[in-house]
Image 1: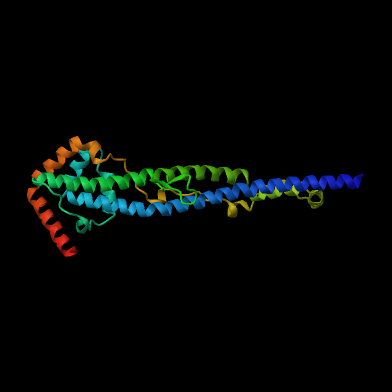
Image 2 (image 1 turned 180 degrees about the horizontal axis):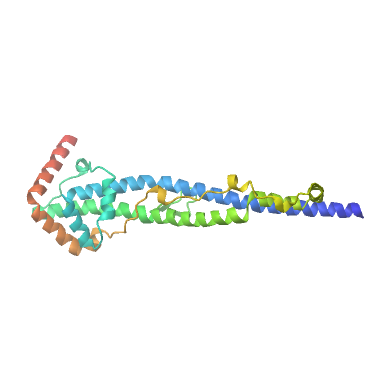
Length: 266
């Protein structure tokens, strides 16, 4: 009878330890996987940010100077500073890819050139902030969205919340202490030596604790979303026309430089 009870107790203890280990390691493994996934998304977003900065630099190059840039964003109702920061991260080596639009008036051709550059910038900005949907090659029946800023920021907040919970609730040494408490021989040995399970101070926890992810350290700018040119064409178009008239000689020089670059390509 005692043997059967001991076998039952051992089986129950083993089952409890097995379930506890599965939960303990499962929670930690899931968090580790999510942190690795977040890091992959961060690396996926970096090329998008580089393209966005290049697009911003090209657009600002067409606006001639700081006053032209400030007025452009004022016509959109936003501060220019976040977009100036983007442009400052790249060099505007973009004339080689431009062509002079067809038109009878200088301001009309300049308008089309600015519109094309702005829409390329706006499209990249939207991809950076909100992602782009595409077919999932691994699961053709589903769509996937590319890495984007708000996704990475929200995931970082969720991961850090869970890091705090896991470090507090599933500490390795406290789990080990609980497992020891299920072993009568271990409890008896500690009682004989005058030690108790509660004497442990969870010393393993510092080295095995999860570190929080640092979104701010990524140095990802957080600019405001901007509409396509067609959605903001009223005030924006009027401003670009005025800019063309105020910088007529610079516009002609710009067109001449674009044509020279085109001849070199050909």
